Length: 339
Ligand SMILES: Nc1ncnc2c1ncn2[C@@H]1O[C@H](COP(=O)(O)OP(=O)(O)O)[C@@H](O)[C@H]1O
Ligand code: SF4
Ligand SMILES: [Mg+2]
Image (cartoon, rainbow, N blue to C red; front, side, top):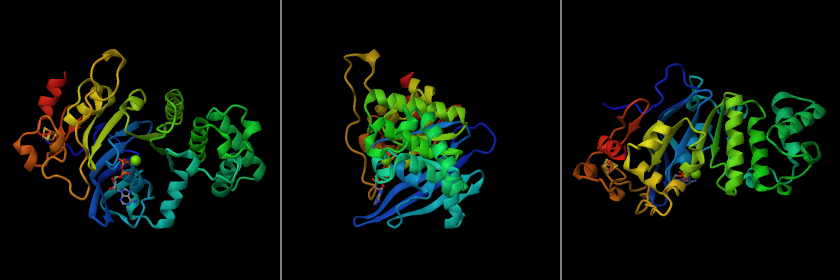
């Protein structure tokens, strides 16, 4: 039995329903197949973590969803991005921009380059209200201070006129979260939001995001290469490899017993306190070039369980239990072996 890859079978219209999305880049070495039939859903109030090594297509998928793909050279070549049931890929540029401004927002890894260096943070926040909602200067400033307080900036009133470089990395990330929240979006996509931060600050920023997401019942997509960071806050995980989703599962089920050898490899490479002294099994080898993805299962050159069929037959996303799917011919053996 195969799965449509949409995971989370709970009924109702998803806030975001990405279907069979494909994105290509024209490069000097040929066509890079960055996203190859990705499907995922996010409901209001749900957190989906998208996990995978660098270059697996996590950011490009998000950029296509947001409509900020670097195009050219990138191009969406197939699929749908249904947001509140409407396919964003069919909208006119202007309409798309309006939705992106107000209803979906993105948080990036590097706040320093995402924020404007020559405008105070208060002015940047206030501008959101002034431009999108026609708020008066004075009121916009007041709301900027409120937002800064909401995301935990100490002495917000005194710091509203400070510039981005005057804040620490963690505080800047909070300001970017404030920018994302300003217009009350239904969906936030956070692309490696804590990767540049110290471990303790990472946890604080992640907790803040999770708290706001719950309180405001937003959909949240958390992109990361670090499963350790999202385990406590995500509901569902989608694992990407070579531009495909290779496993989706509720976070705790995936943690307990992965149904894909690649996920197992990722889990085994997290340092764990309870396994002190145990050797970490990093996955051997490198991800494939996206201009020459191996036939059959794209993971086969690195997979300890690979058989002949893996080199010829691409595995579909098999249904692997409630809310679970795995693109491995041997998902059952993998799951049983992990239990
Ligand atoms: N601007 C670009 N020009 C050409 N190729 C790109 C560009 N952005 C991304 N790609 C291709 O898409 C692949 C996936 O990138 P990305 O989604 O950023 O990976 P990650 O999973 O690390 O976020 C890259 O390895 C690269 O081949
Ligand atoms: S299909 Fe084969 S190569 Fe791919 S992950 Fe499963 S066992 Fe490994
Ligand atoms: Mg990325």
